[in-house]
Length: 176
Image (tube, rainbow, N blue to C red; front, side, top):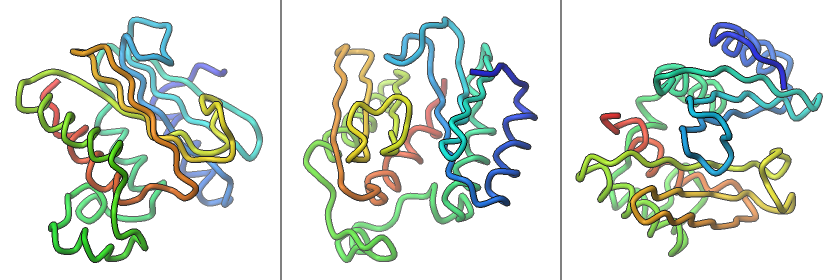
């Protein structure tokens, strides 16, 4: 894993997107299951070429995360990072998904509770080829609850877009 600056993470993501390479990123909090460091870690994975880039920070790199979400999903934050109405979620508009799993719903409800109480939490979407994913046949959504010291995992055959559409805004809405 190569240590880089936050600007290098953005430039690398822009290059990978332009070259149509497979990539994704992680924001690892201090105390995260995947983070051995006491700082925040922003990891960019280039799975096309098996490269990983890491940037450490004392603060959550939220602005960079939002920019990377927009680049990765090809949508402006106004549509991807804003929750949709319950009726559009039921119809599965633009996602091809009509419902989310019970485990994913539990994650979303718990994220809301923790936000209201002012406790930090985080989640991960592990792509099938992600270095943290234990089962490359599935997309894995991981929710880490620091209050209960609980990790909830759910596996999907396809990208869980609706679950992400609901949980991502909650993550970036946190005060910490």
